[in-house]
Structures are given as structure tokens and as C-alpha cells.
Image (cartoon, rainbow, N blue to C red):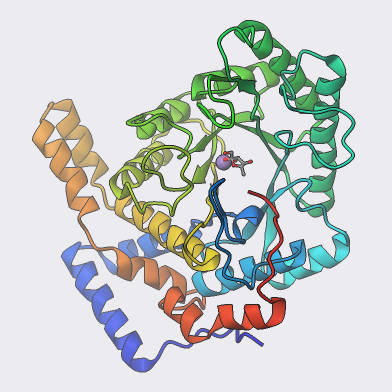
Length: 424
Ligand code: LRH
Ligand code: MN
């Protein structure tokens, strides 16, 4: 049995405390302010996607290492391992129909035993399921045929029902709807049909639920997507009501897009619903969060931190989720690295001297503005992120613990090397 206790040896702990002391003095922070910083990082909990616990792949190949979850129960077990080591996640996002629970009570019990809840439920009208009467080949909520749109609307309503049975209060809608050739779509009518369909789904949501509308500029449609950008998602959310918000997947932006400005804009209009964190060099690469562009991730959290401390910003609580796939890395190791990089970016953003920055911005002192951000970004905050973890019984070094406890070996022994294609 994988031991739940994360020992920190006296030598390791002594080194950790020395690092903390050094950083606190370097930052000239009082004990209380330093402790508040650690508490803020502790409070940042990021949901784990159920579909990212197996090995991902591309159309060119997939190289599973074994020990992957074969059921919703085993996915929850894996998220439990990540929570135990990192203490940076307390929830799981589900994808329906991939994660339809066979025994709701048993799932609830498993979640409770691991300190987990179900975050959002994601609908899926981008694949045709076995026995599905009508195909989504030419779209779902935007489809030209009523029966296909109604089938997709009904699916989303079923997803809400599954979510209600598991205690979720968030429906995430991402559509693959789009076109591959000029002339294939009437852009205005496809948008209007999608708007109508989403309004029907929104009306079916309980009054305490939120809808997150995710945008994506391309793939799997390669000429146009019905919801390609934040502006379109925002327009659809406005049409639905004040509990529909925009979901920002970091990989869903064309190269060189200033994502942190989109975050600031959505905060300003109070429609930033949440994030799908991942890393990318080119497209929707779904790589480790912060692995490719750590400064961009820092700037995104800088917008979130300044937004959170600005009384003019009236934005609902933001949902933090990871949405990645792992073609080469162990899924659990990769997710733990993403959690570490997300908390690191947040801790650095909390170090920005916002008052000094506002003064420098007012004075148009460009160099001072840049240097104030760089001072925070260049600070090694790893002791703070580690302290936020071990304060709650997490491991000092989750990756080392995962390997030294031979957890993957135990999972392979228990589950075998056969893997099942759940998800992407
Ligand atoms: C689409 C997406 C969406 C999910 C899927 C798993 O690219 O980001 O969030 O439904 O990945
Ligand atoms: Mn996503």
C-alpha cells in the first residue's frame, strides 16, 4: 500500500528552514507578511483533469508506460496521490461520457476519503459515441439540422444531471464546431444557432451553476471555429446570462497572442470564468504548464493578483484547472510539475510591489515598470512553494517522493501495462 505520510528528514527540514529564513530576510518581510504569502500560495488549488492521467498521444503515435487508470475510480486514486504529495489540488474535472460513474455513492466515498471534490463537468459533442443516432461530423450546437442540435443540447443537459449527482456546479462547454473550407459555413447563422443552443442549455442549469464557454482558434476544424476567440465566447456568455463566463485555455491562442492582456480585459468586464493551464510552443500542444513560457505565466498571475486587489474589479471566483496531455512524461509527474510551476508563478506575482508599479506607470517610467516586475520574477520562491506544501503534510519534494516510493511501479504491478483509450 502506498504510504500516505510524507516524512521530511531533520536534515532536509533544517535546509528548508534556512532557505525560508534567507528569502524572508532578502524580501525584508515581517514574519506575518511572509506567513500570509505562504498562506496565499496554500490557498491556490488547481483542479486535475480526469482525462490527463493516462498517456496522451498524437496521430503519429502513443507510447504508454503502463499503470494507467482503467476506470473513474483509478483516476480518482491517481488524483489522490497527486493531492497527497503536492497539497495543490482538491478537485477533479470530469469529461462525459468518458467518466460516467457506475456507482455514484462509491465515487463520493472515494472522493471524500481523499479530500477531493468534483470541480467542473465537461460535455463532449466533438466525438460520435457508439449507438449515437445523429453524427456531429458537421458540428453540434451550430449544426444546420434541428435534430442534431437538439441531440447536442440534450447531451449537455445529461452532463448537468451527472454533475448534480456528484456535487459539481460548473458545466464546461468546448465545441469542435467549425469548417474546413471557405463557403462551408455561413458564419453569422452558425453563430446564431450556437447562441440559441447555448441559451437552452443555460436555462436547463440549476440557479447556482456556472457555465464556462471555452474558445479555440483552430483544430479539429482548420478554416474556421464557431468559437475561435475570447470576444466570441464573451458575446455568447452575455447572450446566456450572468452565470456564463469565458474559459481561457492557454494553448488556444494563435502564436504571439498577448494572453495576459486578454485576462486583464476579461477581469475588467467581470467575465473571466477560469483557466485550462498548459504549456505550448506553437499550437494546442498541451505541454507542461510554464515549461515553455514561464514569464508569460507570471504575467498572467500578475494580472490576476492586481485584479484581485483592485476594488474596481467585479469578477466571480476564477476556476483554475490544468488541461494537458503527456506524450513523453509520466502523467502524475507531469501534473505535479505543472502544479509546482503554477504556484511558483503565483508566488512571484504576489511579490510585485503594486504601489511602486502604479506610481511608475503613472510617471511613465518604463524602465522602473519593467524592473519592478523583473525583481519579482527573478526571485527564487521555491522555499515558499515548498513551505505551502509541507505545512499541509505534503512532500518536501513530490517528484523525489513519487520516485523513491516507487509509486508508478506499484501502479503497474496493480494495473498492468495494458492501457485503455479514455480521452485524447
Ligand atoms: C480542447 C480541450 C477542451 C477539452 C479537451 C480535452 O482542445 O482543450 O478543453 O474538452 O481539450
Ligand atoms: Mn481545454
